[in-house]
Amino acid sequence: MYVSFAGRPTNLEPISVKTCVLYDPQDGRIAHIHRVTSLPGSRERSRSEVEEIAVASARRNHVSNLHVLHPSGEEFNYEVGKRYRVDLQRMLIEEVPDTRREDLRGRSLVRNDRGKNFLLWTLAIVALAILILALTRC
Amino acid sequence: MPMVGITGLDIGVVGIGTNDNFTYAATIDFPSSYVVSEIAMTSVATTDFGGGDSSSPLLSIDHVRYGIQQVVSDGIPKVFPNGQEPTIDGSPNVTSVTFFVAKNGSITSMARAFVSFWE
Image 1: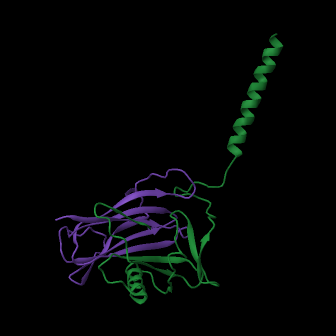
Image 2: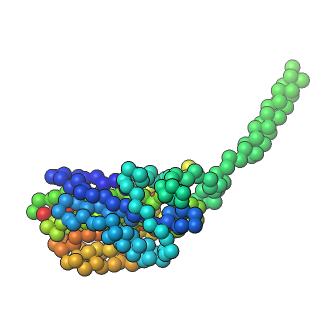
Image 3: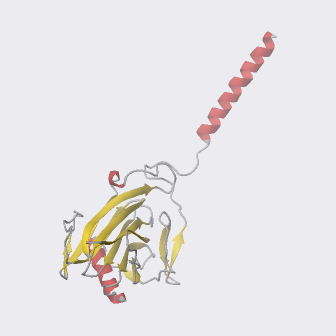
């Protein structure tokens, strides 16, 4: 998440951005992320308050039995499109390599060259046949 | 009434694992002197990791729901469990808005949440 500002004046730089991550203690799978941005003039939330609203928010989405991690902004500036989990040994968030084999529509992400090779061989044989035919006519 | 500013929060749902359920929430707190002129949440993009169509509108994907989860007005939190957009335009007593994005499946998506203020 990033926060951007438009309009005038642009004095809405947040005074704090706090993140709470709820994860499965069995495998480090992240189930919920809650990020709280406080603008100047608002009361800055404590860590425990952020945790409280994160847990309540997760419960609302029928998620429970999770553990809590409070990464700092430097530790967890995630990029959309990448996958993350909690490293249970180091208690840090780490990127997970994408090992999925299918996309959203169930299409294989593993390159399948069999169809392509068949087409190329067929074209080569047809071209060779045309060449032989042309040579025999000469 | 001069416009104080518009905050734009890009909320991205991070793909955590195939067929995982995952929720993301973003709360923005602001002073009671600000009058909310508009709260909105729109889709930006949905991307699958393996290439293909990366411009599908978020609303067309069944696996994602998003919306405004909670608004604090006069110190009292109001929850909107079904993601309906609350009508609070011009309300002087709103001090906090929480947006959420929830996914169910191997999908990455982004929604942009806006709150604009007057003072």
